[in-house]
Amino acid sequence: MLSIGDFSKVSQVSKKALRYYDEINLLKPSYTDATSGYRYYDVDQLETILLIKRLKEYTFSLEEIKQVLSSGQDQVLLQQTINQKKLEITRKMQDYSLLLDRLDNDLHTLEKGKKIMTYLQKIEVKLTEVPERNIRSIRKTMNVNEYGQCLAELFEKITIEKLTPTAPPMTIYHSPDFDPENADMELAVPVAEQTKETQILSSSLCAFSTYVGPYAELDSVYSKLVKWIEEKGYKMAGAPFEIYQTDPNTTEADKNVVDVYFPVML
Image 1 (cartoon, helix red, strand yellow):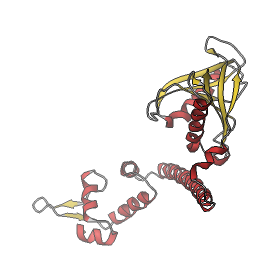
Image 2 (cartoon, rainbow, N blue to C red):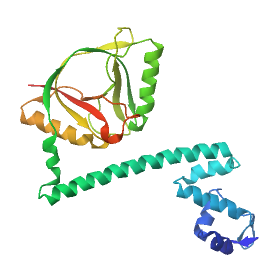
Image 3 (cartoon, rainbow, N blue to C red):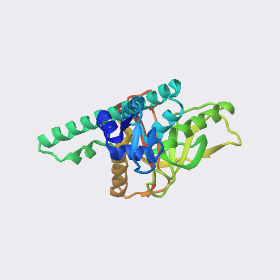
Image 4 (cartoon, rainbow, N blue to C red):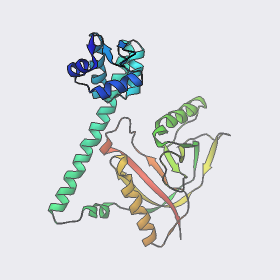
């Protein structure tokens, strides 16, 4: 058996961390002296602590690691969870790649002696009449991370109800302010058939702009639209909405195409 000090030295995990793992039942020592409180570990537990370290490197939370260990290191579960982490890390790498591109563009702008925010001048805003449309929708107060799940639910209902989509999906934002954890959102798809489950979305005069790029930068379009509306003497007259011309599941983030609309009136 190894004392906690020796186990710490060999595994290169601090004694403080080992004590914490004991407290949360992640890795308990093989023996704890009732009198002194000293902890002792079997040599075989070195493999377990190395697995814990490896999974932490893969950005597993301690709770996720505990689930893997409590399953007896079930290989199917481990494979599934590692695959999920791989997807998460890949997305983060893509996000950082896009961020580096933005940094390069901003540096290039500064090298030209221009202000970073001059890119807003390139966003084109137009006035358009959005025609009346028949939609099948789901409206919920949700965390924005639940969007994909909710959209899948909507398309499932459209399939079950044998409705025919006539245009790309859209999202109507009913919340009076920005709260990503409790957003009042209505996901909708224009359909051909009129049923008791569908509704008519009235025509509206809108300020609109087409955006190409990662969704994280849509705030620039929103800001430009609001500024344009005020400068032109219009007033906002309803919930803004987005129409997605590309599928984010099959489109590279920097090639997403989104039409953003703000209903307005004079």
